[in-house]
Image (cartoon, rainbow, N blue to C red; front, side):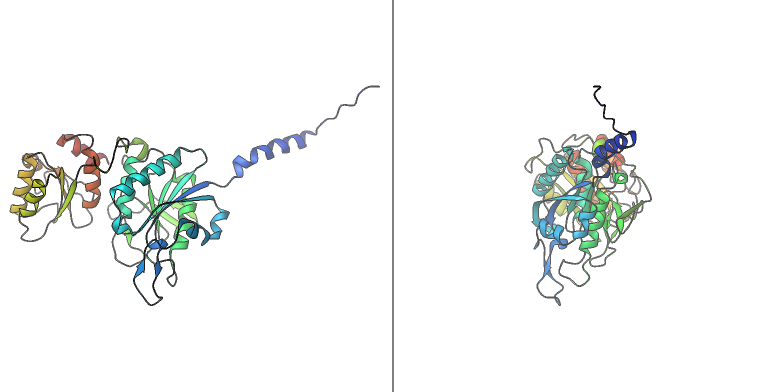
Length: 357
């Protein structure tokens, strides 16, 4: 008796192959949430109290508070720190950068969301843009109102951040900042208002895009060097071997005594938050010139909040031995100078960093 041959219909075989491949196609993005505290995790003492305690809630609390996020991503959380961002420091930066790099190396992580206070979010984001070694999305998110406030903005901001971190269009753009339905490049954005929801702006190059209930609309690309194209790294960096760089704020009648004191204390770099095009008083410029001749790297920036401080405009950088801060505000210039000094003390090379990053 001839044995029967059981044939699988072509349609059934095709469906089986499709279903076998479906999980990789249909699977939700896997997002790692790294929490550092801030207003988004804060709680008011009373509903009528404008003050609050940062970092009251854990990363698990934040994730549970927005259950809709489980519809758009597979989430895991980790508490890296639990502080108000006004107390952000180099130790947390290095720890956070290490955790971001480690997480993004994993094939099980498609993007990272960092919850962070708004006060220094722009600085942390810019630091990460220089030392993260992946093109996967990194999104920083915070809030202007604590979690217990009336009409808290944290939940929608976090939802948008998770959606953005899982969006393939966010890949390769460097760290992004999301608040108030607005996407900003970490290199461009600044906190511009003490309390308003639209506190973040990108005054030089404009915002990166907008969010609409989890959907991203990008308006521009990020043309400067960052992440995988950055020559900076946290390898072998410790808090102890990060060069000390300080910011000196210019104002009418500024003398040179503070600058002289910083030099005497052994600072490796000084960033001038200058008036207008990065200018200052004759006394301050004379003290800075003396500092530069003693090997201290001096960068001119502007306290105005926007615009370019170009080389040899108003101040003769070539003669005085200064570096032009270009588009960077003083707080971000400090970060670039600090990392730049771990690579070189050559003024021309340091100036190149400010042009390219």
